[in-house]
Length: 193
Image 1 (tube, rainbow, N blue to C red):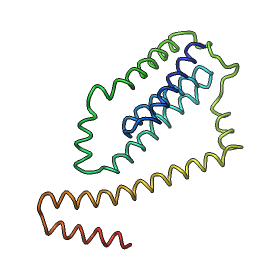
Image 2 (image 1 turned 90 degrees about the vertical axis):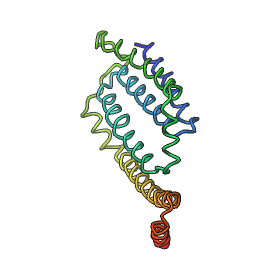
Image 3 (image 1 turned 30 degrees about the vertical axis):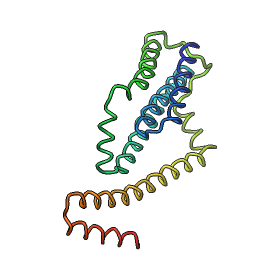
Image 4 (image 1 turned 120 degrees about the horizontal axis):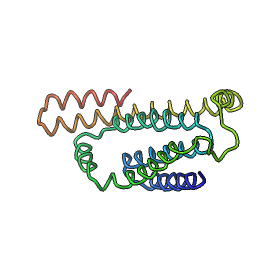
C-alpha cells in the first residue's frame, strides 16, 4: 500500500504542475481532474473512504462541470470554434491519458486486494467528517462557498460582455448592417449601465 500511496502522490504532483504550467484552460482542467482523482486515491489508501468518495463526487465531478460551464460561457465566437477543433488531436490527450491509466491500474490493484490494507490506523467515518466541517471549520467551508459563488458571478458577467461583442463582430462579417447597428446600440446601452 505504501507503493500505491507514493505513486498516487507522484501522479498528483505531476498533474498539478501541469495544471499550473499549462497555457490552455481546457488542458489544465484535464490535468486538474487527474490530480483530484489521484488525491482521492491517496485518501482511500489512508483509510478515509468517505472523503475519497466526496473528492470524486464533489471536486472531480461537480466543480469540474462548473469550471467547464464557465469556460463555455466565455466562448469567444468563431475563434473558439477553430481552437476547439485543434484540441481534438491525440497529442492533447496523451499526458492526461497516461496519468489516468496509472491511476486506473492502482485503483484496480487496491480494489482487488484485501480491504484491511490501509496505511492509516483509523478509518474516517462520515459523521466525523460532518462534525469537523460544520464544527471548527465552518468558517472555511462558508468562505469557500462564497468564493465559488463570486467566481461564478464574475464569469457570467465576463461571458455576457464578451458574447455581446462577438455577436456584433459576427454580424459585421455576415454583412447585415441593420443587425450590426442594433447590436452596437444595445452594446453601448449595456456598457453605459
